[in-house]
Image 1 (tube, rainbow, N blue to C red):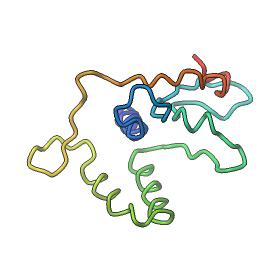
Image 2 (tube, one colour; image 1 turned 120 degrees about the vertical axis):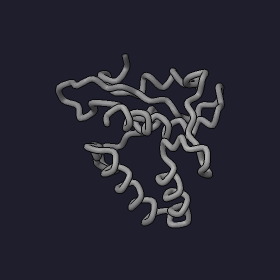
Image 3 (cartoon, helix red, strand yellow; image 1 turned 180 degrees about the horizontal axis):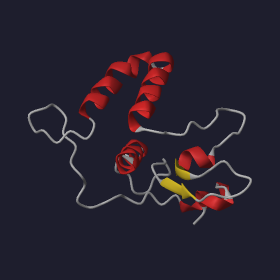
Length: 130
């Protein structure tokens, strides 16, 4: 289940990159190792870490995929109701491989695209820089 969540996370984060290889528009995932004095442990969006504000919002650990998707859906419904119907379609088709349905997920043969935003590394917590 952790690998499915990791795939989903990377896919969601990667949506903002939209295939761009040179624009500093996010999309990279960062792995943070456990360290004393920091709450970061696991996979995070580079954008999230680079703009993190400890007073803005708490981090919600994703225990299971369904729980995380439900929480995201509630937030979208509350804050961006015009996008909620699209989110429900996304959830219905997540990881779908059935060619008879409207949306099909196929792994990219070329892997992930490097968007060259490594200069942001100085903004990351020290346990997230390797």
